[in-house]
Image (tube, rainbow, N blue to C red):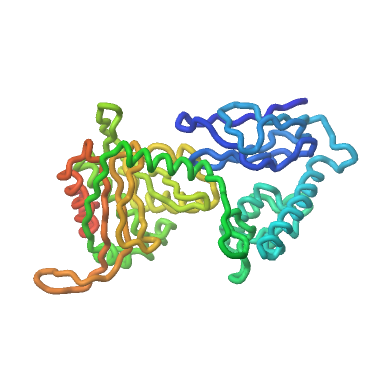
Length: 417
């Protein structure tokens, strides 16, 4: 029976996607649920698996092609057999591993990387191989649970969760990345932008060209929140099963400020201002593919523990490439924490169609004056960029002050004052 392999239904916000590398060639056997190709949207990478075991008889769309929802990209014959080969489910992975070994060995030699560091000493399924490479896990050291000891994606996920299979400090990255230049003077290399990077570039230009962006700054004394965290962090983790961080406080503080100044939570649609009666807060998270902004839906209805759990889950799944398109779509306000990388000050760019974004920065001890006395306090600079088309300076400044006051007096978040 011939089965058509189609692009899954893409959300309305995603017009098209790009096919990455085919894991199989025409005429090769495939196993049920084996990843055939990765599909890159401007938000996430989706895996397209084989719905049934059989032979890949035709590839309709090729690597680099742009495709839309429900387009046919390949066909599988579930009744066909590979001539002179072992059963399809067993033969295909072995052939793929052999080909991958040869390709990786050549790449490793060209870049001065030990081929053994790449992790193809055992049969590694394509999806597992990609995840291992992205996460920096030595796939050759992962115990395989598949047929014949093959390393499955689930095995790599378990290794990542346990943290037990990271390469040694002296070992190079699992594979030679495309952007690593060969040795020598004045070398150059051209690498195509990923769809995510292209989309980020488009949105940043769109934001600068269509929004009247201004930024207001302030500083916040982190001592009250740090004292509260130090006092309750152990009990909090024991009670809720999650560490108590600082981002949860800022999400709560942002919601507090947005309730007081609804225009900061609004957006522009043509000649209309759309006021949102909900608070969907985007939190910028780093991933192997670049910066992504998953959305905490209805943040005003979540407890501090729920917010921290959601953020931790986003961070973990961003590293694994598991965030969904829906989780990266929408949002009424964004928080970006450049302080995790050591930034002291920045002017964050608005994420359209939102109208404001909060930038957090590194906390540093500085001399400040309190009650006429010079004291040392852990201080953080805050920056809020806003669209001056609808947000006046008054609301921009006062909303940032409201965030500052809530962080400096966390009881405000409990009492809602």
